[in-house]
Image 1 (cartoon, rainbow, N blue to C red):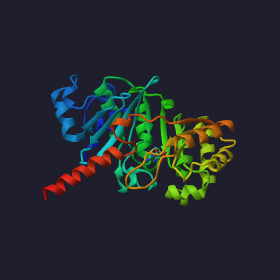
Image 2: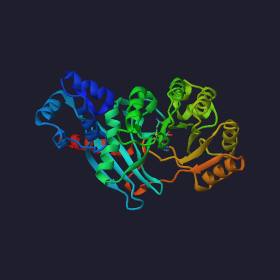
Image 3: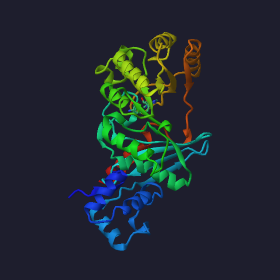
Image 4: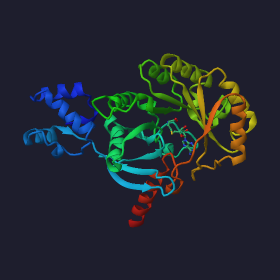
Length: 353
Ligand code: SAH
């Protein structure tokens, strides 16, 4: 029998669940508070519950907790990278970045990914499975608990395509922003997508105030298709129309992510095409010097090319920043830590045979 995933229930559902097992409804608020505010990882820490109730909950529910497999702390900027173990043996990674405006956590939304972006390490072995809302939440809960510092911003930019795990993502956002829980402001949450048009349109209708980031990476369909297989399914024109709908319905400006790959999308002709493409769109461009992965031969653009690309966009009145690389001393971004770990495990087990 599948046990109830208690950390994925909202307060209303938890109340109904407790009633269904013959408990008083006020217990729900107490338990919700232990899970989502005090962030405890064991029913035995819930000291205002009777032992009988704690035992009953242990029998009938699953309290999802991630185990820390590895923690790396950057000596350069205090960035921390975590490898977390899930109860089925899968492994995911999350990152804590420290900024002046607060602590930001980058979480994974899936184990692996099926979008196939050419430069991305998370997708090399395809999708393993979706993460549950509780598994997304617990990346933040564990990090806040370990550091003892409040997490104020969350970016869903780790492994996985969040809009390919839509229902769980929405439930996660509602739990994370619930004022009975950690109560992180919707405006401090960013969801990054490779551009699943129907899902962007659906998200526009959810009455949320989160920031949507679109992985653009090219100024036209031809270059985009080279880098991102999803561009064969959705044309840029339709992706940008969906983004415009998101802006109109929510009033939230978009972020356009553009990873600069030497000789592929980084010359001034492309900067010009990008400026034209984004004319009339409310948003901000985030240039990301591509993080080379060993399985592909993409190379980071030269500093000079990045600067010229940026200056060109600025001259065209586009709001643009170059993403600062965080935690460079503790292994690359975007699924590379997990991948490094899995392949070293594999080598080890091969060695044993
Ligand atoms: N699936 C989501 C989240 C992916 S990760 C999406 O596609 O947006 C967040 C961003 O990092 C995306 O823009 C992604 O394209 C980019 N990215 C992935 N691997 C990268 C790499 N090796 N170098 C630079 N950017 C990368």
